[in-house]
Amino acid sequence: MRIFGKEGCRMEMQRVIELDMPVNFRDLGGYQGLDGRQVKWRKIYRSAALNEMSARDRVKLANLRITVDCDLRSSREQRSYPDLLWPGVRFVNIGLYAEGDRFNQAHPFLRLFHHLPEFDDYLPKIYQQVLLNEHSEEGIKRVFEELLKLPEDQALVYHCAAGKDRTGIISILILMALGVDDKTIAEDYLLTDELYDFSIEKQHPTNEKLSQVIAKMNVTRGEGTAVKGITETIRQGWGSFDKFFTRKLGFKQADLEKFREMYLEEEEED
Image (cartoon, rainbow, N blue to C red):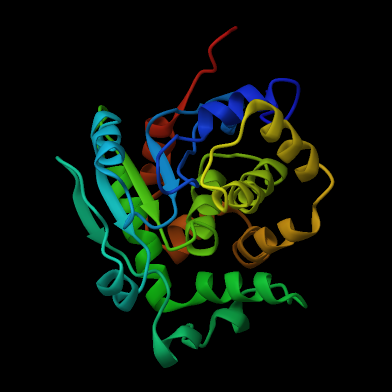
């Protein structure tokens, strides 16, 4: 199944959750993953900042059974623009980016013992630095830990300010863990930029507009190179996501198998 193929518009309309604010709140489900299985719908959500939601929005998130809110923003961002929480949700402070001088702190032997790629472009470099940073590693682990203990009948959302870079990095890692191919991961990443074109007007894309978004994404590949800062670093540095998950993040292989069982399912026939 191709998300951006013949039925791409219908699939993407299902993916985008209509809220008053933010516009960029969407479901990570529906993508084809490992062994042809599909990422489960209504389990993992990604978003921009949640500080401007209406009362109606918060009721909707409660009805979606979203019980965990992982905030990837800095402590300053959280103080200035605190999340508006909804009934039954638990707030988790992640703070993915290291603050101050700690941003460039990575284990000194990583480049010595791992064949890490070099990037010329700015964003892949930044994404790689986040992946290697000791503080960010703890944040990444925390998100996976929250997902691993999430009850079957509940859902989780993670977000930053714009829902692009920090949220994008976590999305890339989750989709890699579930065996989604690189092209689809890049397409999911690019969808954020396109949705923000509509947020200026504070409206949600119509079927016609979303079709135009998908067509544009099919020819706008350059921005997707940022994704390689994660995917190529993991594959060249550790050989596979499985090894990165166990050796860098410190999980067991059984944890990864559990994660895949929790968030993948057989694709339903039309």
